[in-house]
Image (tube, rainbow, N blue to C red; front, side):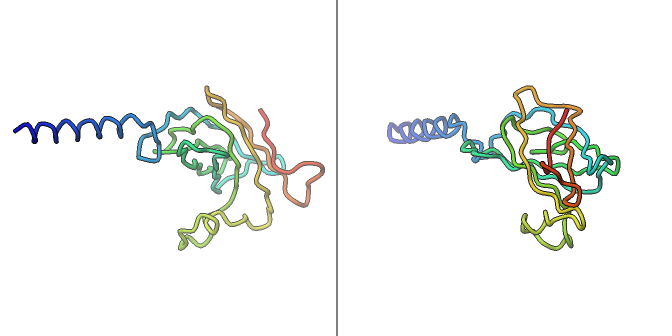
Length: 152
């Protein structure tokens, strides 16, 4: 009886330790904030593409976020469920298409959009999030001193 009781206490202690680790990689969701706006290319709405937000220097298991950009250029970032936002922090932003739709390799899924030659760029999402942000892209044929850039 005492041996069973000790086994139960030991198991509960291990579960408590595992539950308090705060490791997002174990399946715990990290708090997200709103991140919405418009995507434009050379000053025109740029839609029907995918945007990937790749966390920089994340050691806390922060997931990659993404957005499906609508025809009018509007988007809403998703981390766990559609439109739930993004975890605050610094991200590398990649714009692309899903390619042929048959690949599950992220690099192939985010293949360069035909004719746009868009470089990846960075964005810093503050703790309160960002809404109505403008992500302004410049195609390679119109680039001057800068490529993709973030504006408000």
